[in-house]
Length: 487
Figure 1 (cartoon, rainbow, N blue to C red):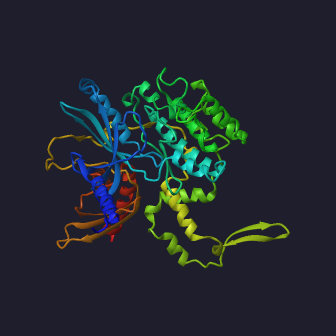
Figure 2 (cartoon, helix red, strand yellow; figure 1 turned 180 degrees about the horizontal axis):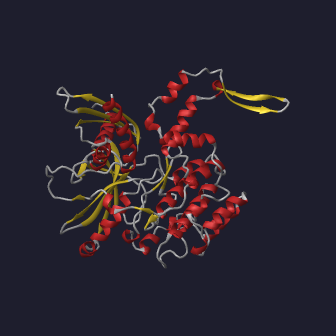
Figure 3 (tube, rainbow, N blue to C red; figure 1 turned 90 degrees about the vertical axis):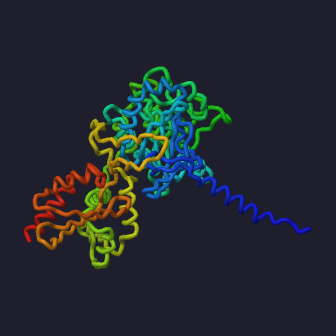
């Protein structure tokens, strides 16, 4: 009898398993979001019963399908309006250091009641996973990396707490903070306090109990809750790991040992101020950005990079490469004059343009935010601008999907006008390049009565351009119209 061939069979089993994970279990009412069988552990958010990998059929990227189930159908109906208001506010949160909530909808029937919401997929892993890998080769975290991470987390918290009303994250742990390969830090999407699991259910997760302050569950959650959790995250980042007693909770003694192991007095004072037992004594996220352990006067290089990124729509994509070709690499870039000594000179040949491109990309992605220079201001998130939730339905209908609000920044604009054959109108072609390198080309038959401001407002209304870019686009169109019509 011939011997069996197990290797091909194992290969087929793995292939079948992979195909099963890619099976589509469910679609959103509009058909854009497709839920797969594969589950992911992104966020570890209390109250979220299941999180699945999903596909955005329109953009062709992976996202996360989150389901929040309600056991009491009547209680769900009674709080439906409040749930809608909460998710409308969360859908408007747009910050480079916060996992984006793309879409949500309510699904209620006689048998079940749930909220489904789609969030950005972060594949690089959590802070806890990163710290475990780092601890194998290092005894302590690099101080520069620690400062950069703290600044990004505080930038996100400062943004949430400045909203009106303030948004409390409520579940900031090393499991809900993610680090991408380029050093960009993102905190998991915030979930309103009213929708989180009861306190007793959360306290069953003993492994993360030390991230919550002593007053947790006894008083209403405020911004001080997030500051305590951040302080514990900052401590864990500094020492790489706070030893737990087996699989049980991290004890107060273990936290005290971690605090005493800090050798930098400024870092110790910074963390202890966040871990104050009295919530009123904890500083705000915005004020922590000015703490001496984090705050520094930004270099001219960083300020210039932010200015460049903000006005990149005026320049071609390969502007650095094109400028490099026109430079004399032996020319003097900068010179420092010294009395009675030869001057110190830097030439263009001493500047790595590849490093400059990488630095600009990091600034564009939010790795080096300037949030600690921004004034604290309440940020209203009006409901009128929120994308409408999708209406769950049992059968898919051909009704078109409502327009989504565009959230991506326009980094480049080009416009061309051509006369129609009858000379009565203009044929306008507008090319927009968004921050994720998506090219969007739009055409329009322009009448003599059309105004640039109206065109920009219409593009925002139909979801082609984000609201923040409307004035910039109107100015650009106005200058183009004057140029061509004048000619």
